[in-house]
Length: 109
Length: 118
Image (tube, rainbow over all chains, first blue to last red; front, side, top):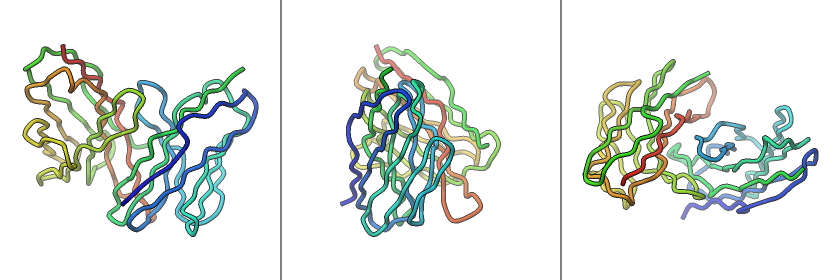
């Protein structure tokens, strides 16, 4: 079956760095997305990886290892507004998104 | 960037009535639209996938006679919750997929519709 695993909740301090991990098992693979979702709002796109390696975009970076079925989202210089849920989603062979349950990130001052 | 709108953003209705939610892609043509439901503190649950001009494909466990989806054009899809009950109260989110340059497909999400059935 298809499965996405990510931690349920993480806590970090303002100004620090946090890494949110995601492992996936899908029927075929066409890329890995990370979305941010604030409470009561729809998800917003953060990143997309299809090749191995690190993609950096400002304070956010995303890494992919296809051989390990593993990705992580790295958030630097954390701000209070980064408190949100972070959703990992893999694109399968039919180009359907398989969603993880999301990681709730709590930022403390 | 690609924008998807949803209307209404929130709705309260009485049990037994029907509610229609519209999803529009404003500045691109959506080859496929997706309807999701999200209960509090849970992840997105895909309800159905629709391609313009064809019948929607429903996920297992989703009643197609209760959740009617009409994808009338490349920019509009509607979800009608028929004979709504309190357990249908949820956050309904649509997303639209447009083929971008390159080899990946990204979904653009609408802002969501919060449905409360009393």
